[in-house]
Image 1: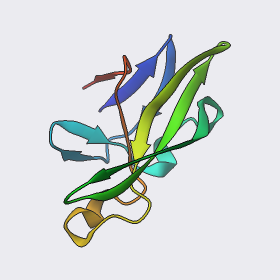
Image 2 (image 1 turned 45 degrees about the vertical axis):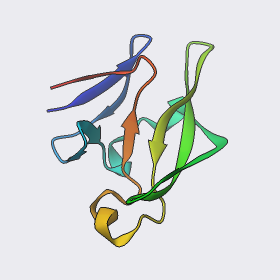
Image 3 (image 1 turned 180 degrees about the vertical axis):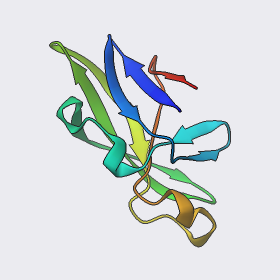
Image 4 (image 1 turned 90 degrees about the horizontal axis):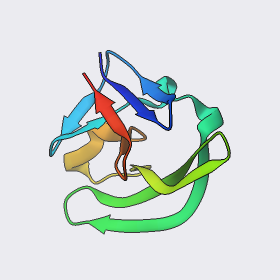
Length: 94
């Protein structure tokens, strides 16, 4: 079961997930929401669409834009709508 961790905290854990381009996308109900803060950052992917970001906060430390998701993905990526993936030092263990 994939588990996302940063700074000693579990950010997400689920046996239901999607994997795209080597990234584990966790379903929205698997997130420990207390650690997520909305970010104003957005990026574009040619086939997935516009990504939105969260900063992750644990024990007073912030990892800016460490999580991303697609709230309105293109058709080819519909399976990851609102699912969250991680980078910037967040570890995903299986």
